[in-house]
Length: 306
Image 1 (cartoon, rainbow, N blue to C red):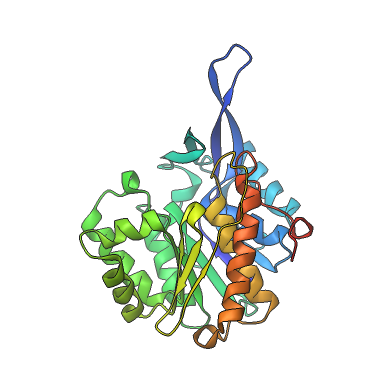
Image 2 (cartoon, one colour):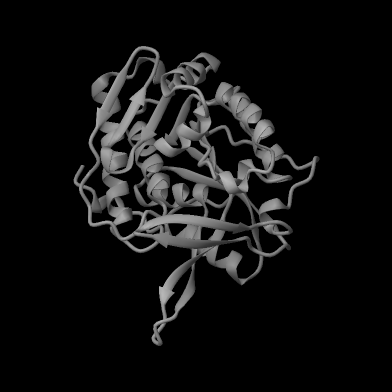
């Protein structure tokens, strides 16, 4: 079973009203939520762990998880309102403005704990849940705990305008890299993490901290996977891009789904070029379908060719 840990929120997507003005339509979302949805639709065995509001928007989130075959046994109810993300599109490329203070996304205290089911094969963490004043410490501590038993995949999904203390967050990232077996980053994420260092230097640094495999998504330029002993590149799958909302999240799901199907979670250090290429390709194919649709709308397994 794949355990996805992180935020669930409602994206406010820009739409053109009948009078020509721009309005916003609600759509379920959140980086980790999107990955869980995509995993469920691809046929993976997946559970979602987060705090979700009991309000109407929160109920839409729960309904979407169930409709996509995602387990909700580890969802915790919150009486606080559902967090929101205002989505802005520029030639299909999405940027975000988040509203999560005082919401279910931050309804965590120092005594919050979760019982981990024995069936976990891998845990996925990421998104703005790692940055919140209350959610960040909770999920980072949970990541450190889970990493003692099963591999962890991390997608920090860097949002510079959401980072309040850059120095502190860079130190926290290093700690998370030490717990992550798999790191997924976009080329923009990696450039931010590198700062004034070269990309080669920061990749070596992350691998030395303990990460076994780094996946770098490069939009239309494909995906690159790097470990200490292997480097694999696969092309992106051509698509008519509507917007990029949820593309990286769907890629992560496709990659994890392939590893689960091939029973490779315990073999990350010995993945062959062929095994890694298949997992990257499944992720790329799934992401290409998501970008061809409005909003984060991952494909079902029957929509993929392999």
